[in-house]
Image (cartoon, rainbow, N blue to C red):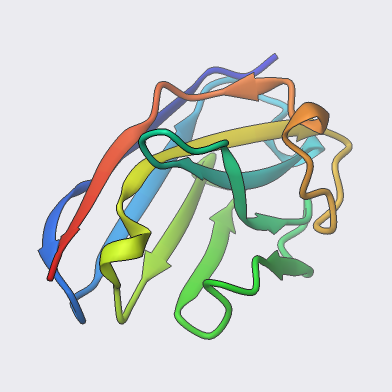
Length: 125
């Protein structure tokens, strides 16, 4: 198991950018596929992006493709989500998640066994 702590959320105007970071504890970070999910008020948690264990493969939800970029640094046990051209509909709590031996095309939340506490992202119009 890894413990995950997100940071970097905040309030930004539409069209702006934010960078979320997720710090993982443990020495086996490179064994985990990593993902970002989000949950808006009154809505189901939804997949945002995922990255393979070596960082060589990524996957994005259609709603964020071309605007968001997921990356990881296995030497620093971190995964990041660069969010550009933010829209009000991107407003949500963003969660970092880990899946042991996970692959980038895993977009189902049930496949991820470790979760962070979430960080709020609010985009004003």
